Image (cartoon, rainbow, N blue to C red; front, side, top):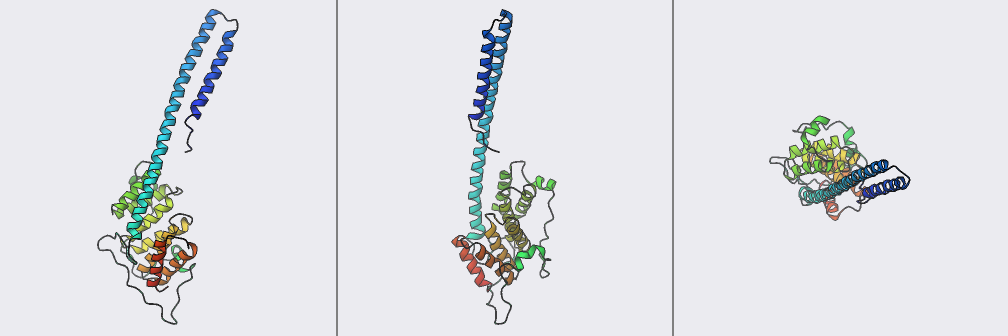
Length: 290
């Protein structure tokens, strides 16, 4: 909602007041019967009282709008800080090949893979394999122990989100993720995307949805979520992270060629990503024999 300059609305009201007063002065300057003049003065006085009340109301609404905008800015800053903190916990500080903050009993990443033997199939080109993952049938090997999440209806989505602006709904889902409540965080992020598909935070929510699966060792649904984040939000701030975690998920599923495709695509499209992510990509490419 565009902000209203604090003085714009009251200034317009004052212009109306001045105009009414001028018209009243003109009306009273002519020859009027005493009773009519008295009625006109009473009418002008009543109008001025009402306009003063309106001006006061506009000032109050302007103040409320400014307060709401200030709270929104504070909330956005807080969300940014929390995202950076959680990103460090889930990925930035994790050693190569690990799934940080994984629920107890979740599967671990595979051991380092040897380099391909001469004559063996070479890694896929960056634009093949894994980047078409969503349009291909689900892998037949080792089906996931966690069922594929069912589509979320609008009513179900609103049942798991607070009745609040999208920014507060996003923060609610994010707080569940920080607490390690991955199941409820999955539901909340999925609900946020369902009811706010065009919101500027939808791409971030899609990435964190993938993290709720990855942290529990559900690498197949994680791969689907990260691939969808890459395809649906190619210009989002989480696009490099989606590619990286897509590669990590495919590696954990025992698919080094697809993992390499994601890592190579990340390097090709985002050569200027942060040094930490560059080092992690290099480590993972070495582990997967890219």
